[in-house]
Image (cartoon, rainbow over all chains, first blue to last red; front, side):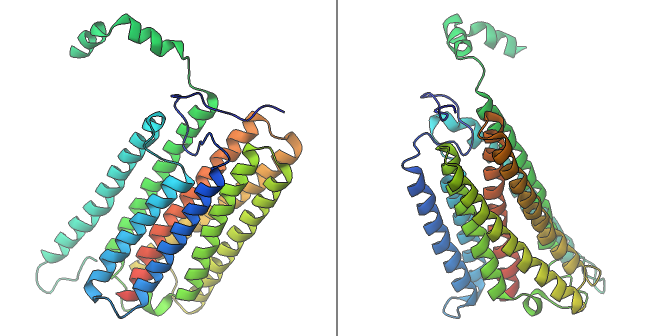
Amino acid sequence: MEAPYHPAPGENSAPGDEARASSELLVYTTGLSLAVLLTATSFWVANTSLLWGPGVPLGLTVLAIAQMGVHLVFFLHITTAPNKTNNVLALGFGILIVFLVIAGSLWIMNNLNENMMPNMPMLN
Amino acid sequence: MNVAVAVDEIQPETLISYTETGPAPKRVVVGFGFWIFLLSDIVMFSALFASYGVLVNATAGGPTGAQLFNQVSVAIETACLLLSSYTCGLMSLAINSRRRIATYLGALVTFVLGALFLNLEIREFVGMIASGATPQRSAFLSAFFTLVGCHGLHVTGGLIWLAVMMAQVAIKGFRPAVERRLFCFALFWHALDIVWVGLFTVVYLMGVIV
């Protein structure tokens, strides 16, 4: 058997790497609690009539992005620690592409639908 | 070019201190490479999300999401996947401290929860297809089955991968290569849960309210 891997201070570490195993359980449990809280809130927001209807999709989007952040930090251990710059940079680029693809597609297709000639079928 | 000038201007001492550390450990290189793959996978999912977002209203007179989706089953699926992500994390902890029994236990719970998720999703698909809501019915349903089915395929692949990894732990033990693969599996499983967060929000919850 070999000793468990311990990165040296300042060494670049892989996503998911964490040196101290003792506090790790607490990290995962905190992540789970936060994720459960956010998920429960999402389901409540979608089913309640207490909230202003048009604001609900925006609220759900915010909750989903928050939960993705919780997963990234507590489960995938993507943090802004100095030895994790590469992972964060790659993530930033990924988020940029995801944003361009989703926002760009929705924008262009909405624009096409709005500029349709009368009596033409919608593209959506 | 300016780049060459910039390189010439670097002090020799800084160059030496960089090269002294040597190449990064294999675990870091493998983890980073797999992280890049996961991000590319997420970019692929973003294209499927975009097409779903564009086609969500193109029901062609067929059933809409509000008529098809069962929120209770989605809530159970979400709970299964979230808990399996947690037990996968516990399995990673067991692997780091070389506890074999705890590793098997964590993998077993992760596998069962993942299989439960998949079972519920397949039942939902079968029920939809039986009621005539097939992928051929409308562009909305095509986009729905592609997006959710792609995630389901990833979960299936993850389950097979997990089973193979447990066989490797049983036969080869905690070798560095096996540990790196287990580490990549954990990243993969957590990333699938991130995709599911987007999925249940955009497809199921927003589909029901709109």
